[in-house]
Image (cartoon, rainbow, N blue to C red; front, side, top):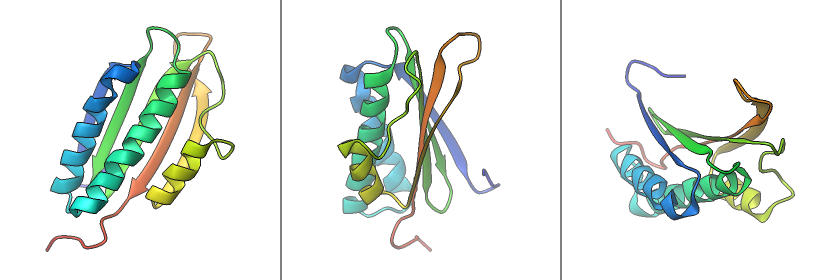
Length: 134
């Protein structure tokens, strides 16, 4: 939930693994500005990379990858794409366990994609910095 003191940053790019560096760059910069330490920001960047890569692998050809970063006391990230495959990342994958280890909360779900017969795959996680700035 966005509050008066929170920001929303959205990044939309082709679901192409060669472009995922853009999501990593945005993630690290936002984490540092949200008060994450250097190691925490690196972990946050890795979590974004893992979620984005998992979604890009599932995306249909020509699909977009959307990353929404909600910045308040911590960071909440939602990574979505469209796919004819109805299964988002989950506990049967190594990447899921990496995400679980790097984040404070983690969820994934599927919903019908608007205007198509496919699916919208969603992964959302949150992370709070260990020490909030004063």
